[in-house]
Image: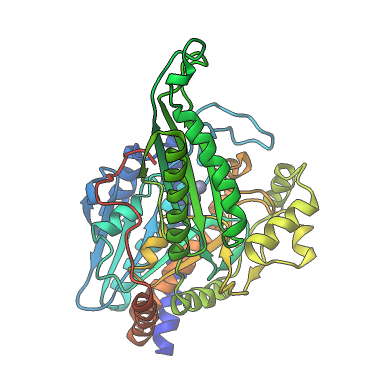
Length: 476
Ligand SMILES: [Zn+2]
Ligand SMILES: [Zn+2]
């Protein structure tokens, strides 16, 4: 076992010495494409071609999504491990690689998914090469997951059983800290309430009208009162997405659109039930009718697996943080001009429980946070959570952007296309490759991970948050 472990480490290190530049360039090519959700044709093609050249077989267009794919390498009987790749960009976040904000007006990789997709590909290929060189039997899969930014592609992929039969998944996301967190992400539901009333001339005969807008506004008031009586971590946000056309017509149609978030799916279902009662109550009060539709913007709370997380954390400690140089540090300091020490402390504390003031004085985090964060709830939601209900999953973060700058910021766009992001990406890829190789050689570990998941599912069976009639690409 010890011998095998050393051989894996030597093989993976040699692979990264030889191939790091290639995958940094791959991530930059996807950064240049900056394709929006469900439109990632060039990005997914580039990743598929790269994996195919390395001996993976490709299944394209899975779960009815043209830019979703699965790449598989197998060399015989054994466990199956996998990694998740994303590659969608964000609207309007495009900017030039510079130390000040120079927007282009186009889309940009403001969540670093170019790094995410290319880094996961490097991990899958490094694993596949180690399997071949060292006679490790089993299967490694790369799941090409488009449309993370609101499209919930992974939830649809789960619904179509794309992840069935996988023993463990090592996933990652670019970040500003180095951590394997067992914090859960929030469950989320996107719901549109549509009120139907009766139009009337607002000056001449308003008494004949029944205002759908009134109903929507009253629903907002009702939900404001509900907020005091839900668990404190619950988040309920809305916009009036249709409030009528002109003031001189009593609006006969109105829509109020909610995002409901709660730490656990079962809590969310209860808040949803109560919000529906408010909708019905306000429809009754205004003599309108109401219907509601759950959209594609839904995912379950996160379920990090402690066994797979512990393995990944051990490998992160072994590999160490990204190796930034003085030029990276100087560049990060310029990107961080205007970010106060309080802002740094707040974001590093809230997201990663990093309380060491030394970290706030730096602009790039090279430190490894070993705190597990188990039992905490991170303030975001993501479609990767649903994968963790099918397959024991770990979530790794590495520093790819300055301390204190959030996701979806121009600083993240800049870093995702330059050396800081690429160094973070290669660190993550190496940790994931080691973890996948280790897992393939350790059936007892995979069994323990599966048992932990099964025990949870016994108490809380998985129910897909997206209704069966809702299809990929429909409104969120
Ligand atoms: Zn994002
Ligand atoms: Zn993201």
